[in-house]
Image 1 (cartoon, rainbow, N blue to C red):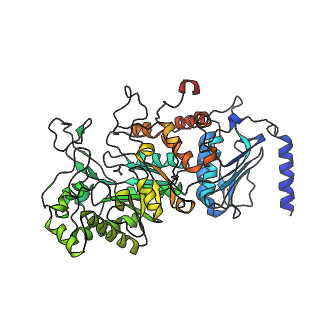
Image 2 (image 1 turned 30 degrees about the vertical axis):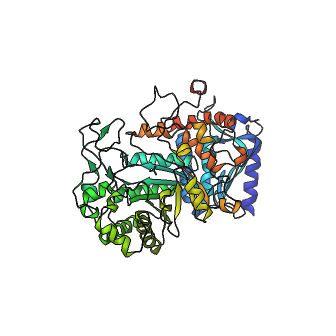
Image 3 (image 1 turned 90 degrees about the vertical axis):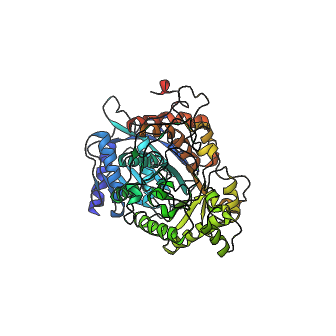
Length: 545
Ligand code: ACM
């Protein structure tokens, strides 16, 4: 009681002496992306200085330390976090069971106190991300960092807010993958879909099959410029071996880093197609027994896994190691672009079709995927696959990632399967981002502007309210055939990812392109602080900087 009186007295004295209590803020001080559900502007500013202390219970240690690092870096002095709630702190982190959404939070900023309350630790983390966007990038003329007062109540529209990265066509170092996760976290995106295996490279160490990385992670050269025509004599190759892979230690480090940022990492192990690198390493997994080379050009390859018991054993062993590394409930098994010509000509494949009473090779693919699903389900995991997994019959518990438009997603939702929308037109960030390609780096094709992404509505009109519940969210895909460097990836995702983050987080009614463009000005400053490369077509940067 005495303690409480003392605290109250301190607060009163503090409040009397705080010259920021009555500062009037303007709308320009609150440029947040994704736009929060509700934002009430108040009078006053909170000063971050060496007296600032963060407190919160022990379960919020991860978020407390994250905020402590963030603020310490901004002001150049240590802003400590303590879970000793007897200590007086002016930034309070807490859990609040009355918040309904699992990812929801309430951020209250007064001139003398900040409180971030979340339903879960994740909600608190998102409150911190919002707070970060309210911190001005430059100190004011008194060299002070001031945060405008507000009450923000916020929660996401969709539960799945994802970004994909293909590290197989081009490989990206651990440090960049972490930076990518930071970009996701800053936008309250909660899923990183890590595309780890391809025709052109196998990028994850599997202890039981060392040749996957010894052989499968290296291609002898890479096609120059556009070109995915099979054995087209006109195409040129660079003559330089290319490779790279993540050790299991690297993977653990990345998954731990993502977990601290409330990002779930979904690994993708492609099957039955896009498997040339694995078949080059272990030719017995293929349909012909031929020795192939790891792919050196882009596109779709005819070499797919044989539907043999040996292949199933191999895939189960690979997936057993994968699930030890990734706690994600969903494991992506690919399923896209698997040409059936080799199966049509394979004695073994035809025998399996006959043995299992299947109609054709599409049903054989469905059989293949259902077997993998059964295995993963037995380990407590569920599969997610590209929309081709609908062909020949969908596996019972599968989630569908709809990329060839929304058709597959609509079909899956109608039969009550979960769906993630990633239609090329809006969600393929390997497409050009302007019609004027003159000054653009080479891209795969297409054209998806930031405004196109911003206009996307993930829940199709064709679905009833009940069916719409199966649309869990949307994701941006980053295929890296033409992206060789981290800087190029950044250029392709920013600010398209920023637009997508609002599509999947904010309410449908709050979407407003002009208003978004105004708020982009603020996040561009954050991009600069993070040393990110970004495209400027949708911003008038001269005006902004
Ligand atoms: C895909 O773009 N092949 C899923």
